[in-house]
Amino acid sequence: MTSHYAEEQNQVTVTLSGSIYVEDAAGLRERLIDYIDKGYNRFLINVAGVDYIDSSGLGVLVAIHKRAVQNHGKVIIKGLNGMVKELFELTRLNKVFELQ
Image (cartoon, rainbow, N blue to C red; front, side, top):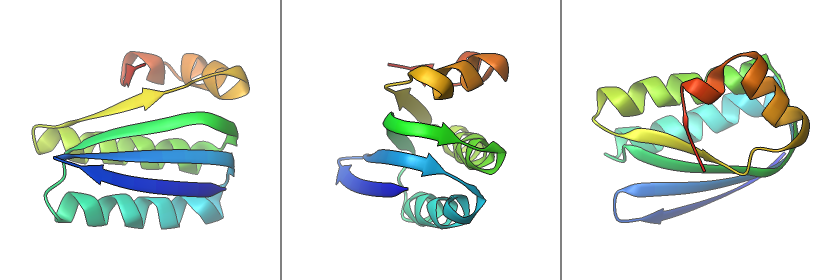
């Protein structure tokens, strides 16, 4: 997995690519929680380049969504396609997140 982070105003844009497995999820969670601790509460997560995400990766997105909402923010998922889109639909996470 590769990741790129950009901050603007109160939003963090995260661009992910490759496959997201358990070993990637911990680092992603830690980085996103650092942003929440700094006061950010809006996240735009671009997954257009992600070809696979496991349950731990989905768990990170759900946990960050929960923390962002508690801080009056939100998580937007952008670029769902292929297997990742199917997984979001299967787990009904497409009903939890705002999608672009």
